[in-house]
Amino acid sequence: MIFKIRKMATILLIDDNIPILENLTEYFEIEGYKILIADSGKKGIELAREHIPDLIICDTKMPVMDGYEVLHLILDLTKTYEIPFIFSTSNSEKVDRTKALELGADDYIVKPFALQTLSAMAKKWIKSGSVRHK
Image (cartoon, rainbow, N blue to C red; front, side, top):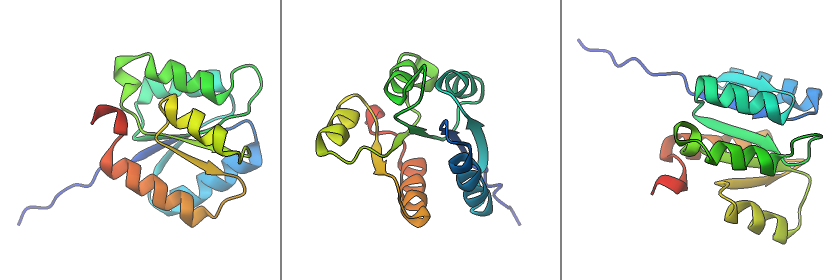
């Protein structure tokens, strides 16, 4: 009998709001994911380059380096270019979503959101991969 060993998918969470990071970490770990957390854009970039996660969920509004700059730096490197990227934000304007998708994000979720909605998004993008490589 041959058993397939299922690789645990890794999600990188980038947000300067520690309670949000803690809640998302707990939720996704229960869902069976390996979680990397970064409380700044700079730390998020470092973790992405070092670990090459299966998905990045990143806040847009952070001090020093915002989510758009994080996305730009992720897309700038060949080894991180194809990582699916979801923005998590309090910006609910359609123009913000359009801008994020035009810049290369794969998806966009507005806070506050249901954890099940974000989980479904995460599963979708981990399974399909980024739209950038299609």
